[in-house]
Structures are given as C-alpha cells and as structure tokens.
Image (cartoon, rainbow, N blue to C red):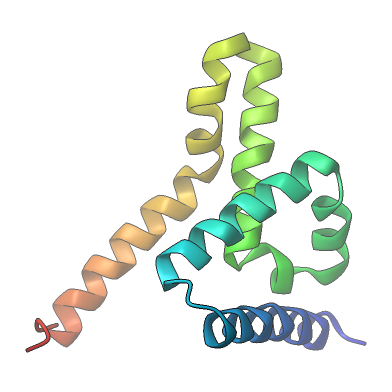
Length: 119
C-alpha cells in the first residue's frame, strides 16, 4: 500500500469516527476538537501514538490527534531540558510552525474570499 493511500485511509477513518461522534452525541464541535487534542497528547504520553503516526504518515500526524501528540512531545522534551517551566512553553515551541501557518493562511484566505457574518 502506498504512503498516500495509507494516509488517506487513516485520515479518513479518523474523520469518519469524529463525524459519528458528532452525529450520535450532543457534544459541540469545539468540545470534540478539545477531546481530539487531549486524546492525541494522552496517547503520546502512553507511547502509543508515535509508532502509529510513523506507520500512518500524514493521515495520523495532520489531524488534531497529531497536534495533541506534537504538543506532548514538546512538553516532554522541554520538561527534561528546562524543568518545571518546560511544561508551559514546550508545547507551544513544538507546535509554533503549525500555529503560525494556520493564522497566516487563515488571514490570507479571509482576504481572498471576503468572509461575511452569518445573518
């Protein structure tokens, strides 16, 4: 199975499971997003997510589960290097490129497509 197909199937399965969760529960989308980030960090802490992400490629590293795992890896690394303060700055340091990219491309998209408030 090629890397592209594997990433597509894994990412699609994660998105489908999230859609089922949204449809079958009364959880709001924001809470589901937080659940995904926290789950990714928790699975990273258990040592489960990293081998899964290496196998699945972008299908596991791009969704919010992967973001949570990235935050955890940054906290773990910074905690070992800087002690207690690493808890607060490690995750943001590790995820800064993704956060900055989301802000920049979101802004550029808003310039290109002229978003409007819902009525």
